[in-house]
Each structure stands twice: as C-alpha cells, then as structure tokens.
Amino acid sequence: MLPQTLSIKAPEIPAVTPSATVELTADAGDGIVVECVQEGDALRVHVVSPGYQRGWNVQFPRQIRQAGTHYVVDAVTESARGGFYRVRGDIRRLG
Image (cartoon, rainbow, N blue to C red):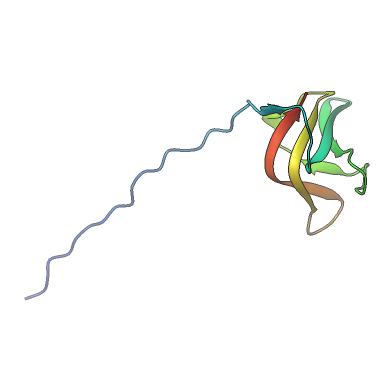
C-alpha cells in the first residue's frame, strides 16, 4: 500500500507597496548627498558629494523624487555596465 500524499501550499505573502514618505535628517554624517533636478519633463538625481561623476544619473525611486531636494544615501555603486549609479542602503531627505 502506498502512503497518502499531502498537498502543501506556500503561505500568501502580501505585496510590498512602495512608500512616498522619507525620513528627514539635518546632518549628512558619513552619507552621500544626492540632488533631484528637473531636466525637461524628467526628474533626475545626481551625486553632489565630492569624488563622484556629477553628470551621471542615480537610479532612485520615482515616487519620492522632488525637484530641488537633497537626499542622503548610505552608499552609491557604479552600475555593472557603467554610466550611472545605484543607491545602496537607506534614503533620507536632507532638510
């Protein structure tokens, strides 16, 4: 006689909704400062801290971009194919 099979289902995990709220900080500390700028119809983010390519864009969440706003990020890394940065770690609005 064969053992009875048991059907196991994975638990449902709710989708994560991106937040448009960002923690506010008055001090950049050891973080990297980036700035959101209006370029035509697009909002772009560039690193303003020294030691980085200022003309390169930063891959940054669209829902929190605000023109003229400075943000502090834990780190940025050059993309594998080059030409732009990716944010690593926490994002805080500098104010």
